[in-house]
Image 1 (cartoon, rainbow, N blue to C red):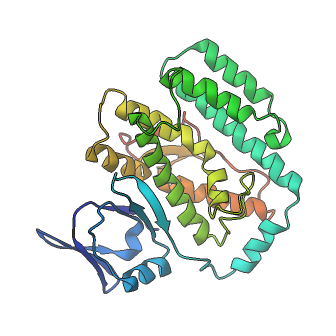
Image 2: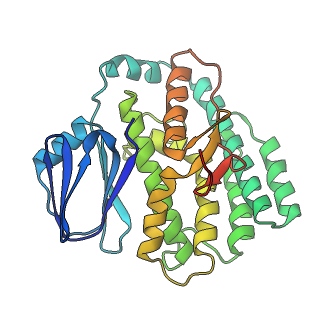
Length: 303
């Protein structure tokens, strides 16, 4: 199972040889087995690579995240439908009844709101707001037609970040961290979905014709509060979004979490999560386990 996330920040040449990714650094060549790599993050616009390398990475289902001049993830490259039974898998996605997706979306939102309340608890914030969010959780209807998700998010972020906080404000340091952390988790989910033969455009609730990653944006929702908690603790006392912060956010995939009653790395939990969703579509499972903030152990726990 691939496990490494490779972050490349310097102006270097990258090539492939003998099933290894080779980084030509100032201190010499660094060889990394491609079988070990899950994601490559390119955070320098002067990195030099070849289409042959990109083809080999895609063939090995290695995702590639590309960052812009502000060091923020702006693009994602991955293999395209390389699963041996991709048509059959997509058939399971297409043939589900709308009620199946509406009901499952409720479960996703229930898990997300539960995790938001746990974040506020861990930060010792207002019990009144925590109770209000939990009350909204009990009001979720099939398909979340009353949009309890948005109401809970407003209370959650206002309590956590202050009433002047806006997710759309690019000048806020915390938003840079959230955007970066979400992008890393989003990219990893996209990469795993392809590995399981699922079409990332066929969403559960997100249905935009312009979004290639509708399903990714559905499945990431319960994971977002975990990113929120880590980013809040990481950046709350800082004034700038530094290279150390980006490195630590990329490393979130190597944090530990208790998922499905097992202690594992976050990247492995995401893979198990997607595997369970695939089995749910095929009728081989009746439910899936959602990640919890209570189960999140961070990067300081031994496996």
